[in-house]
Image 1 (cartoon, helix red, strand yellow):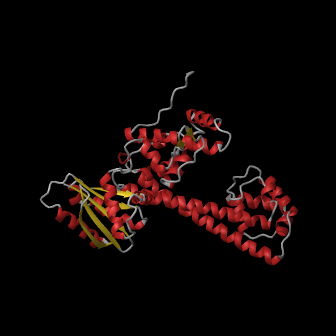
Image 2: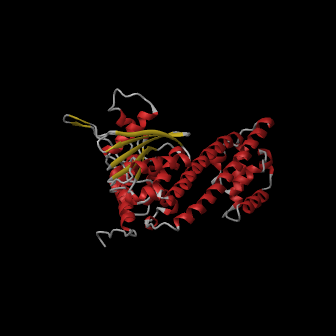
Length: 409
């Protein structure tokens, strides 16, 4: 007995279509998208399969953010369904939309969408086997939140620099010190006017920087002099405009610090989960705990993928061929499909690894020199694609990273 259950999930209900192995509709019904509704779905399926030998039982639903999360996890972890060998597939909506195009005369309704999902399951060309286990889901929520926070920090820093140019337009050119160090942030948080900074004794300004910078300045007096040079050469604002800019700089500093504090809290939670997950990616030089956690969170259990090509495709690290007759295009764009988070972590990790591992540095340089344009972007993405093979081997075989010996060694 083969049974394929297509689920079209919304915020308030789930439309279900059950197909047998021949594609015939067995049953269609609707349940609420909550625990009682999911239990009703399970019980309906179990009732239909009672006293039958089950060969295949597959549930499929589109990845619709939080709406599909709870029913997929419920079905995946249910013991009665596990005993029947049930598998749960969470699929990219684009895959379903493309598959549906083959039904040219079909309307757009939730019931029909559930049928299409079930039929897609029946054809068996599925990207991966099951949903992630709970620890990977928990890690994914943390790493994705961290990703969003880091990008918010970047936006806030850009916002800060824009308004810093209003207050002191030559600061970035004259001062050879990070604007976002604690000392500099405190300097702008105090809302000194440019005239106050210009007239402040160099020794006092240097002492302020050294205290707020926790004695990390090698030559605080030199930095103080460069600050005063910047403020003396900058345009002056009307008092009312300068006051408004000071308020914006102060509030932006508070936002940046709050976001950075949240990132630290998330890092602690990520570290706790990673301590309980067997993995060896952190042994790769340059990959670090942040990139390791991001990659592990998106891949989940490595057994979900048949091989490294499936991981690369899941991350969107592949190029479509453009061929017609005897013509084959040399310059084709990277696909825009795939998991953006996994692609981000793999590309960023590759950029770091190439600085630490000679093999990857040589590969990057080779790919960089092959084309006249988009050199860095192309070389980096190809290096990330190479890194996927290493990630797959280490995770699948539980190996630690062993560098290749030099030919001259």
